[in-house]
Structure formats: structure tokens, C-alpha cells
Image (cartoon, rainbow, N blue to C red):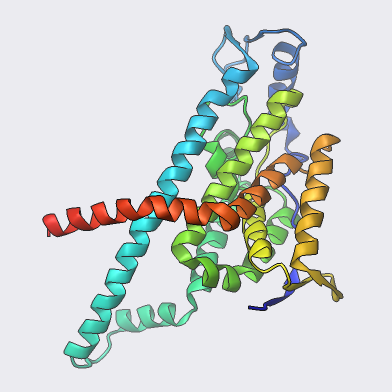
Length: 333
């Protein structure tokens, strides 16, 4: 199967070079002074109470210990995402069969206004509904960044860093953009690739891959920051989008792609994939900090793995889960 995407763009990463350093300067200074010294064990303490990113005072934290909770969260979240995806697919299939049966049995009735509105929503393609929902969530968070009183809350829960106590930010940061260009580029790429991705995966697998890719990219970013003792924060949907790009370029290596600003210059998906991996690997090794290259790398590698091996491994193991769900459903019917 050949596919051609006329427009695409490699978006900016989970960008840590943001103009709100006035909110995190104390955090980075405290981390660099107390936890990034070349000592076998470190003490992170004496944080001011107003610091929303503080960790527990007077506790010694080894670098490897900082990864325990994020690793548990990543494994658990990815597993739950695909279990939920399998059950969701099963329920979607049942609902489709039920609706087909009802159409044959029931006569057409005059449509009410509520039914007409539902039909308008249903007339929109499934891929646009799914991507529109994700873009809407990102837009809400993006607009919330414009409200000053929301900044402490967003900085705490919607930016990711291994030096923060809450692991939920590994997921929530995927829906967070502070910079307008960053937001536009990521959402444009997501919108451009929505139709082929949803057709390949279906909406259920799409959500599982999108969310899992975001969490895995955050986890690899955590590893990089702990190893290099980097106190930067990250945010953005780039890790999830790179997972989708990695998956679709692996599935269709001969597909022809083009950059939005250079539509006359086309190249194969295989070439794009090699370029992305090489660029982010080099950026990670060189410790470039304008983009979160390690997060990009984690996302694209997960997408490649899912298409090559993960799909078969995960769905073979989830067959028993769906069968068990069916038995429980029939039992309590």
C-alpha cells in the first residue's frame, strides 16, 4: 500500500527553553547546588515553601532511586493503556453490531434537534473527531498558560522533570504547550497524519500508542537528565507524535513525504525515519538543550518497536484478557 502525505513538519520537541524561567529559576538553582554535585550521594534540601517543584527536605536521593517511581508508572501505564484498548475495541465492535441490528428492526423516526446534532458530529470522519479532541485538550492547557494564576499549578503538573515528586506529569506534560509556535507545529503535524494513522491503528490503538509514546518519551528524557544531571523541565506532545511518525514510517517505508514549507522537496518515509533517529541520537550524545532529543528518541523508537514486534506480542497476550472480559460480561448480563 502506497500513501502520500503532502504536508508534514518535524515539530519542536518538549521544549525546555521557555520564557517563564522566572517561575523555575529557584528550582533549577536549588537542584544544581544541592543535587548535581559530583558526589556518590546527594542531599536535596532547604527548599523554600513557595517553591512548587520542591522535593522532600533533608532526604538523600541516589540517582538510580529517582527512576524507581517513574519506571513503575511507565510500565503500569503502558500495560493498562493496551488492556483498556483491547476491551474498548471489543465493546466498539459489539456496539456496531447492535446498531446494525437495530436499524433493520426499527423504522425510521422523525429526528429531533439533539439527534440532528449527533448526526452532524457523526458525519465528521472518525480521525478528525479523535484528533480534534486531542487538539482541543491541548488548546485548553495552552490558553491556561496565559492566565498568570494558573502558572504554579501548570508548572507543577503539566511539565515533566525527574526531580519532581509527582509522576503524573509524565503524562500530563504531553498535553502542555507554552510557546505558540511549538503548539502550532505539533498540532499541525498531528492533524496532517490523523487520517492514515487512524486507518492503520483504529482510534483505540491510536490512543494507546499516542499516550504510551508520550509516557515512554518522558521516561527516557528522565534517564538522560539524571545521567547528565540536567535540571531542565520539558513539555509538549512531540514524544507522542514521534511515536506515531516512527510507527507509520516503519509501516510504509516507501511513502513519499514533504515538508510543509518545502512542498516541492519530497523524500521517502524510510529516509525521514533514518534522519529523525540520527538527528535525535546525535543531539542526545552532544547534549543539545534547545530540544529534548532524548524524548524524541524515546518516542520514535517506541513507534518502530510497536510496528515491528510490539503489535504481535501485545495483542497475542491480550487475547486471553478479552476472552475473560467477554466471560465476565456474559456472566453479569
